[in-house]
Image (tube, rainbow, N blue to C red; front, top):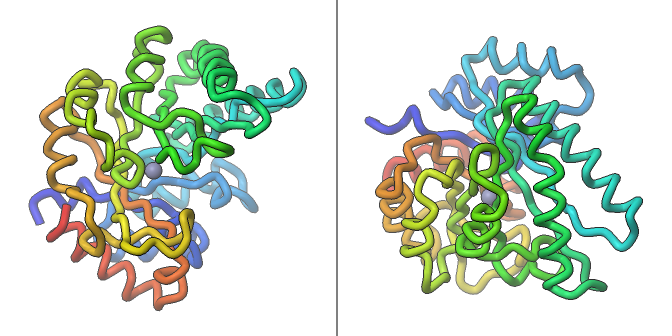
Length: 270
Ligand code: ZN
């Protein structure tokens, strides 16, 4: 129980629950942090969402997600920048210290061009991040998503980008699902140090049935979650452990039982 206060759950993990239901259930179970997906903010004002969290003693540890910087036209790229600045405003309004960036990719563009547009896009948001006091947290995605979700695929790439961008307002969200396979993981986490501002957990199932929505609960798969946690903590990370599971299988279950299993797995497997 000693680290239970560090548990945060992404609203997407319990997808069938709307925000009022999720915060009530999390709060009753003793969960104090939430990874707030932007869809869960729809249908009420930001002030109302913020009050909902406060009333249940729950803190937004991250706002998920924006990014998607590459575009085929200048207009598309501008739309992405506008949306990223809006996400920063939303995060500030609900008290989330960081916005998680799924950086995007267009299959029509080369990887090099995608990566260039991503770096330029993040650079163009730093002033706004600074003005609202919210960090931009780059989440490298597993390379199976390099075609259309993110051309940023390793912690090493994030480090290279942040070497250029500066780390005052840009950090890294390390999600075990995306980084567990990387042979340079330990050295790049060490190099990242305190740039790591988010840590997401779930597990990799064998065989994976669906490359988006078949993540496992911690302990169901082959990821060395404790080993990776030890690496990020040795590098200086001490914030929330965010449970982020997209799973058709778990979403189809009784969500109260799933929540109870999440807490058990958090305590025994992370
Ligand atoms: Zn994640």
